[in-house]
Amino acid sequence: MIVRALARGDREAIVAVIDSDHSFKADEVAVALELVDAAIAGSTDYQVRVADDGGVCGYVCFGPTPMTLRTFDLYWVVVDARARGRGVARTLIEFMEAELRARGGGQVRVETSETEGYGAARALYARLGYPEAARLADFYTPGDALITYYKVL
Image (cartoon, rainbow, N blue to C red; front, side):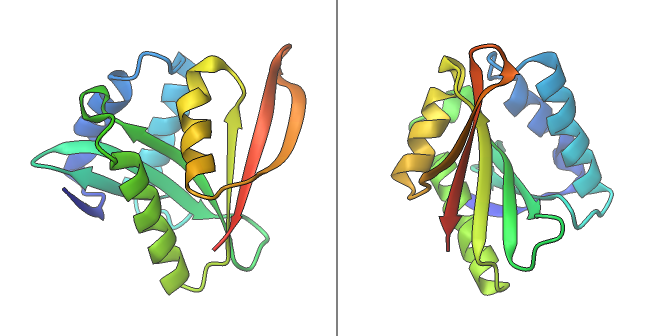
């Protein structure tokens, strides 16, 4: 598996990766694709790297946090359901972190939901050294907190 920059022709494969995860709601899919489309169009606000094992099997989307000097947001890390358990998400995040360090990045912020569907993501962030920095109760809906993780690189 290699990690590489997003190519214009990767969009449909990324759609398939997102669609393989049936936990994403329609509005989440729309936002994820909006960021991918911005990256394809050349935006420096949203950068996408793909995991490729003969085809796209996952991707990570990240970008600079507005009005900060060295902080970045990890917006999405999505792995095709058929590729789970093979370390794809870990590889993508570690690749992103190495790239950010090389560019002078200092911190990474991640926001996610407390719902069960995001449990694997929260466990991944904990394994990769992202401590929970904040929790806002009832942020998304009643009973669904926003959890923020924040890692110093």
